[in-house]
Image (tube, rainbow, N blue to C red; front, top):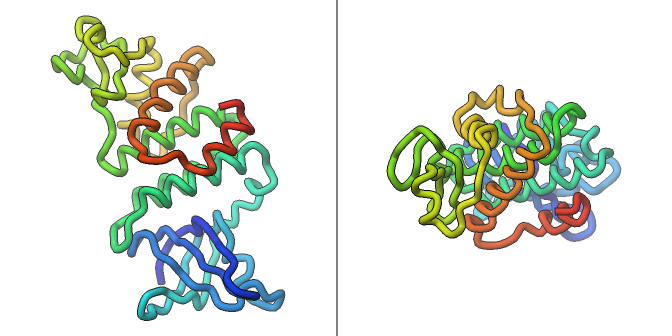
Amino acid sequence: MVTGMVLSAMPVGDYDKRLTLLTKERGKLTVFAKGVRRPSSHLMAAATPFVFGSFQLNEGRSIYHLQYASVRSYFTELARAQPEIYYGFYFLELADYYGQENADEGGMLNLLYLTLRALMNPKIDNRLIRRAFELRALVVQGEYPQADACVLCGVKEGLEAFSWKKHGMLCKSCAPSAPDARHLDAAAVYAMQYIIFAPLQKLYAFAVKPAIQAQLDTAVGELMNWTLDRKMKSQEMLDVMTGG
């Protein structure tokens, strides 16, 4: 039995599906779900993206087989909400991109679960959720930028710019040396620091003003474009639906 979330589900043949699960205990797994597209299947509802719960698997030679699922959340509210559903698929695809087999993916799984919960909260800006998830996903992977000191000189005061090429904050003196440096107001610097260092349960317990959100969009957006080796398919749809 593993705890996880369905990241994707592809039809196979007439009645089967091939699932990608992100699990706490065994990392990212490819799972064959036999007969789940039959109306009588007790696993039909569980073999869909966003489903979170416990899954009983049998290990075959090259693939796992789904035997039983105990669902804790279907995230059905998310499936009916737009543009939230597009954000959700983007988060699933990012988790799939980073997920590794036979690895402890508890950190990413917890982040994904809390982020989907946040998406269903109308009081939280979806754009802030996106940038927080992206930046915190880098933290889970150990690839996050230096945010509490200048990446060039090490000073911790007067941070006012961010360089995605140098992977960190810059002080007033060092910022001119980085052509890609983007100015950040103090509130934007604090927001990035909060996202990186805050306890996970409090990740979405803050808000920013529109001007600060715009700075986060630029800084984290450029960082993700630099970090990822390809553009997520779901990102293209998300950008169309939300205006980028």
